Image 1 (spheres, rainbow, N blue to C red):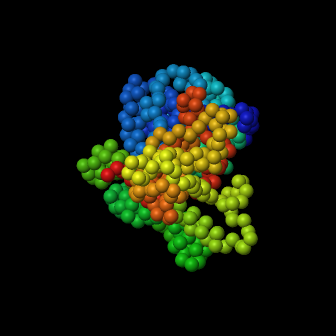
Image 2 (cartoon, one colour):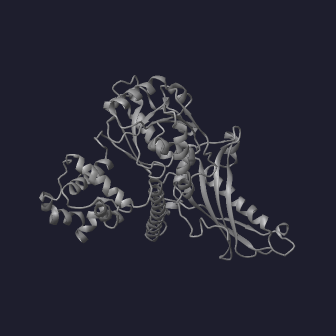
Length: 498
């Protein structure tokens, strides 16, 4: 790969405030909604006369789902503009995500045009579902900054992005793109080689082709095929992929036994793999079957059902991952030899998850109200002191705030008052990191007196540039510290009033 532009030439990810989306279709609009939720200003290029109307519908549809995942606090849903002039759309942007229709000549021409008018230090990503960047970048003057960033629909909910460069793409550009997607909350697979269709689409395509064959041959209906996945292996895949699934199928012998025992069946004619001829009859049968399967549900109805399911699964898998990490850390703790340093108290460079420190204080006379107990306002004060301690622990201390004119602003909070607190009682506040984004933290606090839970607070806080009044990404060193903290979600998080 070429290295015509070196890493220092690319934008500082922390300083990016504006991104450009090329195309206002399902994928481009989904990206726009996601970037808005991340606090960016979004410029969208689309020559269609109804682009703004279409984009409004897409963002409005995506926003409730993003809100369900606590991703929109402090974000401006209306911080977007639509442009028909390409140069205007990319002016001042820090990143470009191309999501034009899947047509090779169109993408090749469009990427060349974007490259010609965009600042040469800006990385350009493509949402292509299967084309290689080598073939798409043939006409570009600066192919070294063109990268595939393949999302999955809907891109505002599905975290996966497959990142790979072409033959002329600089390694540094691929690294930068992978870091950018990661910083905005995506799950990145950085591919070392171009493969037609990438990884996930190749696996999807094999299944899709076999399904079409079965319909074409009258072996199964659309409804049977869908249910064979949703009520069968699909239930395992959100937690363990196909390889681990077969590893478990081998019993105590694992994948080795699976391959030795079932390997010969790979020669059995269970799949055809070659795509069937898409005849008019096959097309009509598939369309009719989908209409039957959808029943009275409209496309928006099906999208809402899909999004609700993805949200529930993401919450469940996040909880399971947190449980797994907790068990792993507990096992690690029980195996620490006497006199050894526990991983959580090792040097800041260690990769083991750590906990946020408890905050402790004592109730003073000024906090007591006319009922003889701590006034509700001082619960807020104590929780605020706990947040200050969290800021110090992750590197947002007073020295940082004064040097960079940035701070953490609470934009949403929910307190539950569970018991009274009296003069002189000692308070212990345990903070938990629920989730973290490029520019925000979701924190939960539990206040206890002698081990008894007396109050909880849940907050969302944004990293704000105090001079401009806008949200900005955490600097790398702070993000790294945050990344070392174990995420968890107490069972009361997300509770509503009443």
